[in-house]
Image (cartoon, rainbow, N blue to C red; front, side, top):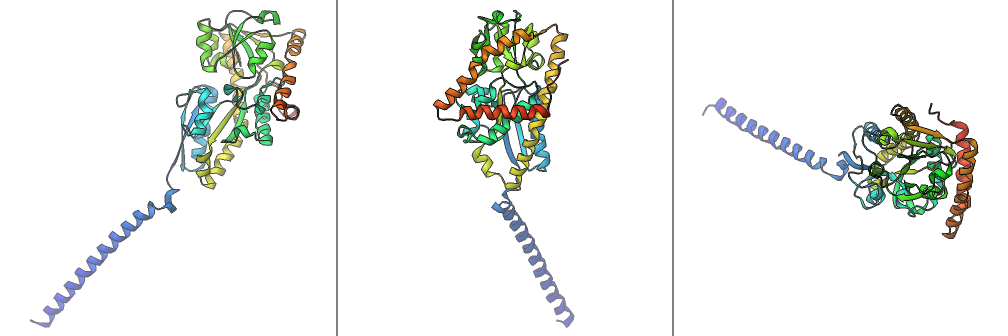
Length: 366
């Protein structure tokens, strides 16, 4: 064989070996990359999915606020977190929401502390009357109070923030309430501490979550409900109720939690925790503003539908204030009997109200 033929064969063999080595290299590279992606180091790169249970209907102002919070978290984490909101109690019912978070049925939950009466004793001070008509005040007071005391009854979850609606009213289906005597004997839907207010004013408390009030009034099961004027539109109460008795100084307030399952929270990367905390802090005032907006909307909607909002005279209002005075002492005594600082808690709450009232004036409905 000629020399050039031998060189050709040798060159061909070397080329085939080189091609084979390249193929082996590429296969090894792909396999290594696949292993790397599935390693613990890269596990954090996967989208974190969170289930958020809220008792508010999706189209209600605060239902929309919950969805906006979820979208903001997704935006600021650059899609690393995806929050699916389950509105209207579709994942866990309002009264089961907190325990649902603790047990892990949902990762995040929003509902009323008052729906599980006795479960959060020290926090009941937040529901006592005494606030101006501004939900930024009620919400800031509620969250500041929580941050100071961090009651052990809330230690089994991670609180993101707490907000509260402006002082509520008594909404009646058929009978106008213009004085204390008009309320006597009326069956009023309520929860938590608002039931004590109803009782002190002469009404008959009927324990029932917010979602049941429409049907209960329509069917005559109750004569009215404790609620806010925003509900004339948001919960469609203008369809079944003709009157609202409005006097903020004796109006109940309901503090509401947004909290996360503790194990889920602890499992999150630190940068995600930081972002969720920042958004939640901002959403405190965002939520207060949303409450105030829908109050005005509800008032305008109700009056357009022929619903009458009754404002008590100053003299009659004083009678109502006197009627509920024992509730403050009752709270202090009940807390001290449990070994909790009831007197201190009430005084601190009142200091917070005074502080924030100077910063945020009462909302005007008209």
